[in-house]
Length: 162
Ligand SMILES: [Zn+2]
Image (cartoon, rainbow, N blue to C red; front, side, top):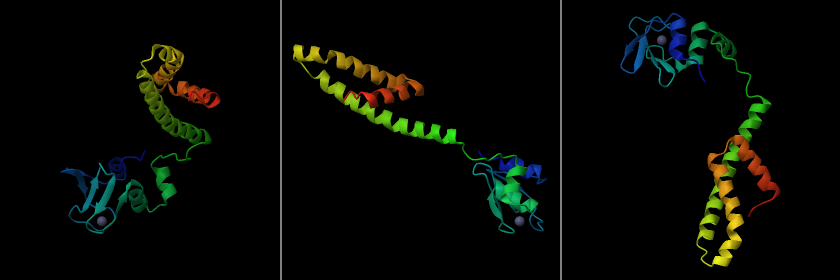
């Protein structure tokens, strides 16, 4: 998450006052007499109508302090070491799992609905065990934790139901 551009501006001594959705002040980047500098806090950007400077919180810090992007991040206390290997693994599991769960759930529900149409009692009885498993898997997909779903995905990979 990006640091607040409003906080950063105030910390660097820019006085701001509210005007509509924006905060305005005297631009620190040029000889400004009327307040030409404005911040849109919702978008996290600034713009100066006097000197045409603009950008996000990093651009603002870089311009006011005359520093590099890395230094601006340091100034803002942003620790950006990027995602760890474990973060990436978790993200892959979450994304992959989400897609798999959606597809598998859709298949199971379809199968269950088809089985529900069976009227022949004998045939129906022969499907009973499988229906129980289907319903159990559906419950895990809907109510289970991520760990439950991972375990289910592994189980289904080993012994596919369908
Ligand atoms: Zn300016």
